[in-house]
Amino acid sequence: MNIGIAKEGHHLENRVALTPAGAKTLVSAGHTVYLEQGAGEISGFVDEDYLDVGVTLVYSHEEIFLRSKLLLKVAPPKIDECEMMPDEQIVLAAFHLAVAPEESLKLLLQKKITAVGYEIIEDDEGNLPVVVPMSELAGQMSLSIAGYYLSNRGGGRGILLGGAAGIPPATVVILGAGTLGLNAAKTAIGIGANVILFDSDITRLRYANDLFKKQLVTYLPFEYNLERAVPIADVIIGAVSIHGEMAPKLITKEMVRSMKPRSIMVDAAIDSGGCFETSHPTNWADATYVTDDITHFCVPNMPSNISRTATYALSNAILPYAYRIAEVGFDESIKQDYGLARGIYTYQGDPLRNVVAGRLGLKAKPLKDVIKSGGSQ
Image (cartoon, rainbow, N blue to C red; front, side, top):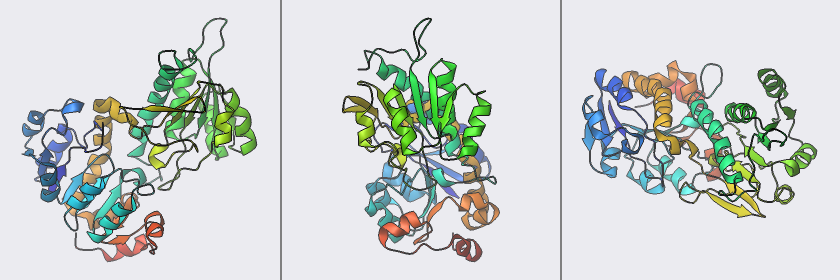
């Protein structure tokens, strides 16, 4: 199979989909792997690293699309990239189609693209094997980001997250007890911050209590509870996600106004639309903005700033799927791996998820019909 590794076109997206080691696995199995020139350079993987393992270099963004039956990306394809896709291409990327431009959805269907979203691929237990490593990284990063913006240099109140002897620590409110939220909690507790953790699943809160030996406070996200936690927070970290859907807006504008001046809000759910009413996407070049005297950090691709570590994590996660698709074909792959099948947004011109179909006034095709009938790929 012809497999392409694209250079990311999004502003300051520094990751690349596969490391040279991952590419070598595919080349050694007899597949042709193309790399867009310079795709891995910011992550520390130069073109020669890929050439040494048998990868073929291509020299334009359009060429990597045209040469690839299976295209591997990191960030959601932009509209102009969707236009470059040849008909019936298979594309693996973090699509986040719940918040993608409607024109992108139409192009994917028009070109009969099979679009697989990293964020909705599942394993046998229903976990998200590609999301988890990125969430682990983002959870840890969220505290270092918050720590900087709480400092005077970062525009904050001059607070140290962990406090010191005789000096109380900062209070960190975390929305969501999934992988990202728990890693944020682990990091916050580790440096001595007070932690308040919210989740709608009481089982997750019990797990967090056991995991951290009750070194945090847990609540269900009722409005009453949020209204009392938000005013005492120095940091709020949004780590809420609903599988393949837009994130709920848990923190209202009124709640934001109740916060202490120059506190920091890190919306790590911004990839899915954000969980604060006052959130809108930013980027690493202009990462924050201030609303009602509260600093908002809403960068969608947080792990891109630690691109080498993040590339290793992403490559490890997606290589098994790319390898299986290349070896047995896409239709056989989704028959063998239902979790991969659950990651399909669109298949050969049909939307398979209501989040796509509903936005276009269409009806989603049942996944079982696709697995049963197969197709031409």
